[in-house]
Image (cartoon, rainbow, N blue to C red; front, side, top):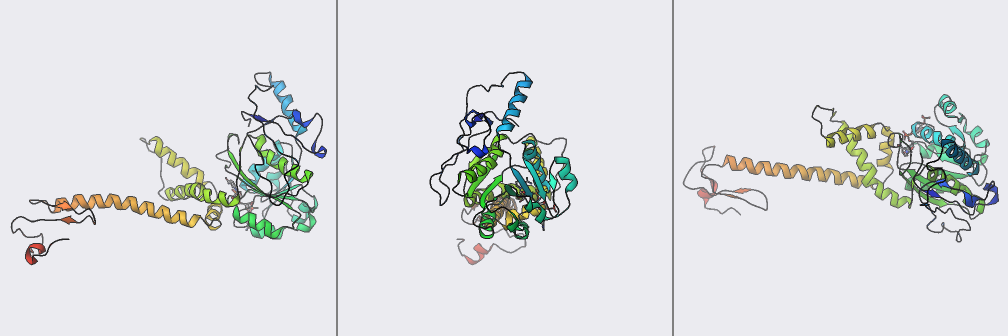
Length: 384
Ligand code: NAP
């Protein structure tokens, strides 16, 4: 899970610190910075600043115990959060493993009873959302299905949470949860929308280099609240994610043409029941992997990508148009060849480039297949 670069975390308020000074912190992560002021806020008084360090890391090439000590030191310095994962299915559990490994306290709640899975991960499961909220988590992390997100958020007893709780989500569409959270949560709550562009399959070997798209939708202009949002995002930085700050609207425009397209092609190919063959090419093997990767996600997830991203309908129409165009080109070529063969006797024609009709000029008075004399000759009309 280590990444190739390091960052320094500056200007954390004292409540988030333990000695030594945070300027000595070196997190294993790619670059991340607040690129623009948060909406409605004065220029931020504190920043999450990532400074890629080219110099060799202190533990590079050193004995393992030194590296372990470094990890231990980092854990001591990293602010620990109490994170409530709401929606503890496939993805919620996948995230929880890393949260626990980083030393955060993980509470979990879900529609189904996942208490055994939670215990195995080192998280605490709460069947009742009231009990969960009464634990006053720093962060509520929404990891439920896109389709159920609204019902789940509305079912949470928000009044039992602390007034300035940070809400974050990992839904694979972004404009919808952004609007949902803005419209549902009290104004005092902070909101950070994220989409980790990876899953249990693609991140089997760690998160390093994989994109984390985020928008700090609303973070109160208060050092502690900014630090908490920064600490939450730092979870992904520490794993080496490529941090991509992007508006939720822009995310959805890109995601329709990338993620929804990928899933649609994967699910379409799955209907063909493709199997490995003794002569499979690399390209074909890539298609088999695509089917595996996309179909291992729930249909709810795929359906959510369609239902809750307004750009998906257009993508689907374009995909259909592209398939029809390719097919038409092939069939037009085939018809052209067939027609040439059909009219092969003393063939002296050419293909009309406009409508691909074969324009036939007949020498002599041969009959058509059906015995009729060629209409052009009979009527004297010109083909046009
Ligand atoms: P999913 O099918 O999208 O969501 C499963 C989760 O939704 C489970 O926690 C399930 O609860 C809950 N759920 C479903 N219907 C519900 C309902 N009617 N009421 C209450 N809860 C309901 O599969 P997932 O892979 O775990 O994804 C979870 C979230 O992560 C989604 O928003 C997805 O877009 C996002 N995400 C997934 C990936 C990925 O690779 N899988 C990557 C990035 C982001 P129970 O298990 O308790 O029934």
